Every structure is written in structure tokens, then in C-alpha cells.
Image 1 (spheres, rainbow, N blue to C red):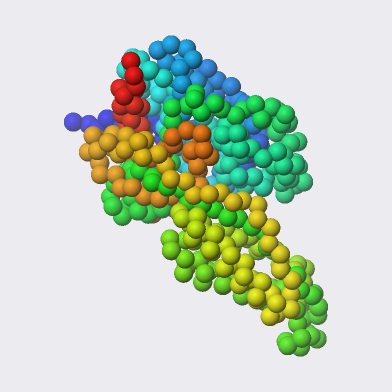
Image 2 (image 1 turned 90 degrees about the vertical axis):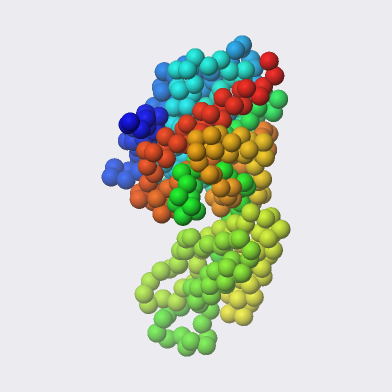
Length: 414
């Protein structure tokens, strides 16, 4: 008998269609509030309407669809993820959760199921935080944690978030009103590729996320003295790049020593950047993560102390400006159990595993029970065009989501 993969096939087809919307021909780049983001938002809104949702693009640029339950005005079970991307991205990080939620809602409607709650499907637009110095801004808007100063942040071209949002059709002055009443949200479910190799190693299509790591990000600057590469003796230099190189290695060493933590210097800019000039300034980014906030706090302090000691010994300046400080989030035990039970009913043995990446679920967890279902991705590769999942795993995840929604409906009071 032929295996029924119809739900997975539809998920994959819609994700492929969504990948058409890119800011860079030849590769997938869809940054927050860009023309490609607007086109993708309109496409998703159209699919939601066809599935019976009432749809709006909110003041911050999120696409929100609502399908009422047995009667209007019931609290909602929210499902969703994001549709923005990194530069030169894969196509599944984010869209899988939006499209998987859409196809699950279609399947429930096809069964004629009457739900004792509303379904809300959300496509957030600023999860990757690539274009502007923000932190989950679109989902934090719903959680009432939007920081107004984000509106004054600027992208690499000098465009402010406020300006870009206005051009997009959003409303900077309307963001505060997006805050949702927790009483109106039963929970938030997010389906996402694992972005790691654990599920592949265990030969499982899905896993249940136990916690989301906390993240500290900072911009660091090392200030030395630019001078002639041929005339200044080695012992008399104030070389910003040599000092920064030692700091990068210190970050790696300290991150490796901290339990379950990771530490990354992901970008480094050298000034003036000439072959025959000693570097006078280096700017680099710092990304520190751990599922335990106490571990992360110690790591942050250790890295700062090490960098300042290196700077003092080498006679250079050092500054660090933190621009993200997200606490770790333990996801809701009840919803974790519901996802696990649904997966087991389909014959899977889903492991519980933490997420080293942050997700919109971390923001929504501030106002509602939240849980995540991870989906196996090939070799754990993400943020890369090689990002890949199978139609079988997309189908498995969507059916687990359908089963979870229906099981939650059965538990609701009559």
C-alpha cells in the first residue's frame, strides 16, 4: 500500500513556492521589512484566507490569521513561526512552522472537526534579527516586550526600522497596542527544523524541545594605533588585530570550558585594513549561549575579564556593548507532554532536547504556555542553502501537530 504523504507533500510544495520571494536573485535572502518579506507576507496571507482564516498584517509586520472555534471570541491556540531569513539562507528555517501550521489547520477543517478554541496562525517577520539590532521584535510585540528604541536602530544602509516599517505598510505608533491579553491565549506551538544533528543520529523524525538557551550578544571594539607595518618594531606596537585575535581564542577557550555553553565571534572588521598598515581598530561580534542562565552569566563575566586583561597587557583599548540579553526559557511541561504523546501515537520515540538557537516561542512563553516540535534536518545543517528535510519528515511533523491540536481540544471543558 502506498504511504500517504499528502500533508508533507503540500507542506514542501508551499515552502518551495514561498522561496520564490527573495531580495537576491540566485539565493534566498528575505530580510525583515524588505520587498521580499512583503511579498512573502502577502502570499502567506492569501493561503490563510483560502483556509478560512480572517487575516491581517499587523503594525509590526506579522501576518496573523484567526479561525474561530465553536463560537466567536474563544481563547486561541496559536501556531506559527517566522518567514524572514538570514542572508543566503535555507528554505525551511521558519517557514516550516508557518506552513506546517497552515496545512495542519487545513487538515482539521477537512475532517469537519469543531474546536472548543480559536486557531490563530502567525507568520512573524523579525526572528533572525539580521537587518536591525533587535531581538525577536515581532513576537515580543505580542508579548508586550517590544523596546521602543528598536525603532531608531538602523540597517547597513542607514535606514531606520521606523522608516522601513512605515514603507512596508506597518505602523510604528501602533506597536504598543499589539500586546495580547494572556487570558486570550491557550498556548503557542511552533514546529521548527532542529538545526542540529541529534534527531538524525537517533533516527527519529521529530523531537520535543525542553528548553531554549539564553543568549547574550555584544559588539566589541579594540582600539590600538595604526602605523607603518615596516618601520615600527614588534615590541613597540599597539596592534588592535593581534589583540583581537588573542581575544577570539580566549572566547573559544572559555566557551569550551563552560557546561553546555557555546561562544562565537561571528564577524570581525579591521580598520584600516591595508596590507602594510598595523591595524588601528578592530570591531567584532560576540554571541554567548547556554541553557542555564547562571552558566551564561559566568561565561559573560569571564569573557569580559579576559578581553580586558588582554587589552591592558597589550596597551590597547577595549569596549563591549551588549545589544541582546535573552534569558533561557523552559517550555511548558503540559504542552511538551501533549506533543510527545501525539508523536508516540504515530509510532515515533521523540527525544526531549534543548535548543541552542532562539525562537519566537521564547518570546510567547512570557504570556502563554509554549512548546516546540523539532523536525530532523539533514546533517544538522541550517542557515545555509544546503538546509534539507524530507517529505516524510514534513508529513510526520504535520500529522503530529494535527493530533496534538485535536487532543488538546478533547481536554477542553465542554
